[in-house]
Length: 145
View 1 (spheres, rainbow, N blue to C red):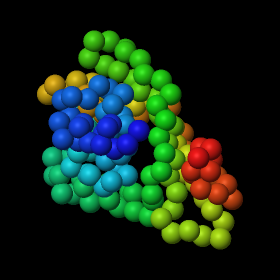
View 2: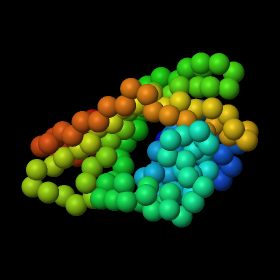
View 3: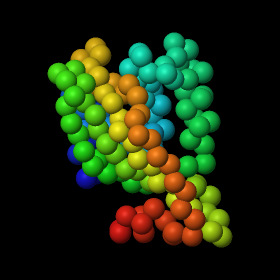
View 4: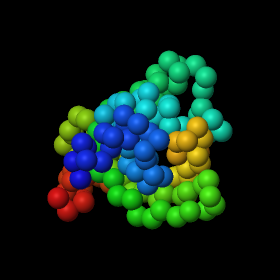
């Protein structure tokens, strides 16, 4: 689905997003380096939450330096209670610089979202898994594109 039909409206007004749409919008914000959106949609109880937004943005930028985020699948979304949803995602990233041995980082997690200020905000990642696949070509090839 094109950015303009999916995540752009959530980036402009996060109150419009469902929990599943928020998971997609946060991934695309990471890919597009829209770090303010990530900060604005992180729950105040999240372990990485910081009042110093500039330091927090620098930390996110450092943590994601050298990666290109190339794919996301939402595999499950379930209501836990009226104000809590769990969204299971699978994502892929690859190095910005191509090497002789292509590498793809495959990630999966169950992202928990809670409503805060009328916005679904990211609380915690459960069942987080990371795997580097070497020699696999690009993430687009792994996804069958």
